[in-house]
Image (cartoon, rainbow, N blue to C red; front, top):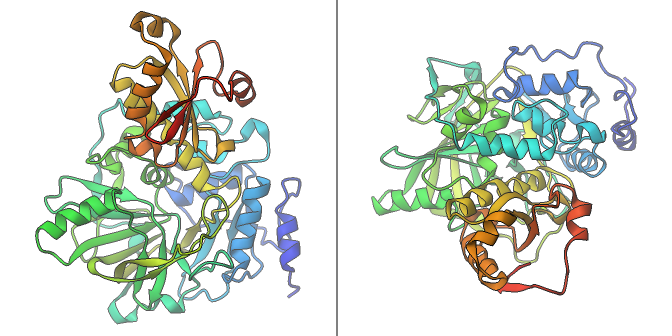
Length: 462
């Protein structure tokens, strides 16, 4: 068989190309025809129908080659790649997919992949996406459908039969500290009293045959749940990881939903439908029944190992970033036939780390409006890597408050910078409601970079 070079694979992903060469004419994934926002397999299929999927049947190496292609797609807004033939695949583990919430090249459908993840038309704009997410906070959640089994249980591996080092886990950047199995999956943890089930996205690097070292940051929800178990004297926590989770679930797990709110409830409100869930093999944790791959096991509260470095959302490795992080032991792997491992490769614009970070403006807007401040809308522009947020001020309400600029900015800053929504945001711009804040050129044209600066908690409000 004639083999494509790495350069040819990258070239075929250009937005103007029709398909990567050497394809089978049949591209069926043998999937159920479900809702793309709630079924990863259906999401992949709808991208294919949109002409937004590059099916790559040529063998690719998980050692840097997959990462290079996915990174190239992010930087050129090319089609999402689905790698059908990953070197080292065995027993159906696994195909790989990249760029789940990166952008498209066509300006009319720029946010189409994200829109499809949230059940919106592919020509939705960024404002439509933020509004859909905002409305989810106003709706009552729907209880899940608990199934007796699900597609994620079509294949099962337990105990000593598991060897993560023998699977095609990708090395995504040349300077990474190891191979990262988890970059775009959903960790599932629960409080001891089961009152709060947290879904979150945090990276995980293969440590040995059955353990991952995962980045757990103090103050994040996973560490809050860890602390509750520690108070009970426990040394490990039941844990699951859904890889190829419902697209809406992965997005929800990536944004700063308030502590105590279960992302599963938020997703049901977002979709307007209950989620199909199934119980784990080894614990009472519930996981999305149509997940591509489920890892089950425990989160150690005492054992740690080196994790990182890993290239971040500004495309850099930082000296000293590697550190000891908790170990997660894998006691079971269950997976669908023809399982697909989603990967995210952070770096320069635009990838999942940027698009999901930008969605934090929804939670910031909600926090400010809960304090009855005169803010009508909010957006964290992708061009700023979501480190800036533009707030649209309600001019009429502002006039009624009879405040002054310094007082208003200080109040907003104190609320904003004490919110998890500003974990990455370090500058806030206040703009009147006669300007469309979703038009970056208009917003930036109405700012005065020297005048009206207010320092709040070491951050800048304009």
